[in-house]
Image 1 (cartoon, rainbow, N blue to C red):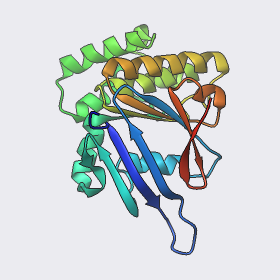
Image 2 (image 1 turned 120 degrees about the horizontal axis):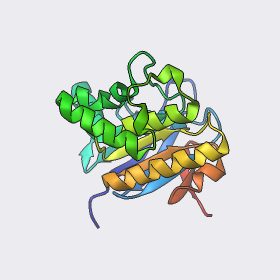
Image 3 (image 1 turned 135 degrees about the vertical axis):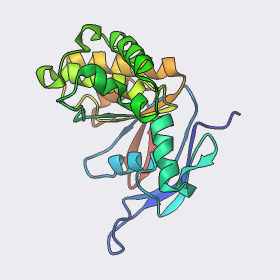
Length: 226
């Protein structure tokens, strides 16, 4: 078997010593090309899990390895560089900057990696076309709809061809028709990059767009039979 893109072993996280652990004994193996969904009630620790996988927080126990490299053993600078190069985020609240153009928003991950302006603009134009808003590059996000903003967020998350895409409730603010389009774009983008994706959602309908479904239950992950 090839080295998993992501290997999580006995992961645990506790924020207060006098409270139960938020996560306890989480295990997960994700190969390149796989796209999974994680469900769970509000407050159960789904966003905490994503933060741990991205190296934004440190586990109290267990191991997270990406392509065999232990994320938990990285320095803060190393973890930051990993996120810039290898991880793409899609958020429910979009986190699109309203006072720079759509194209400039999408270019941001490449700018952080030091890619030149001409290449950034060319790749942003290509990516915006791929998500169906190629004519909007010079517009400003504050003038766009929720569905259009989420397309921008997907384009930005995928433009640097990340190995791992983490999507936290990416359709929570969208109507069902637009949500279905956004999910299809997200899946197509992950497949095109040759990476893998993790989708956090409350909705079984949304989760069914993935290859496998897990439920964060009792502070650990349980695969759901569908």
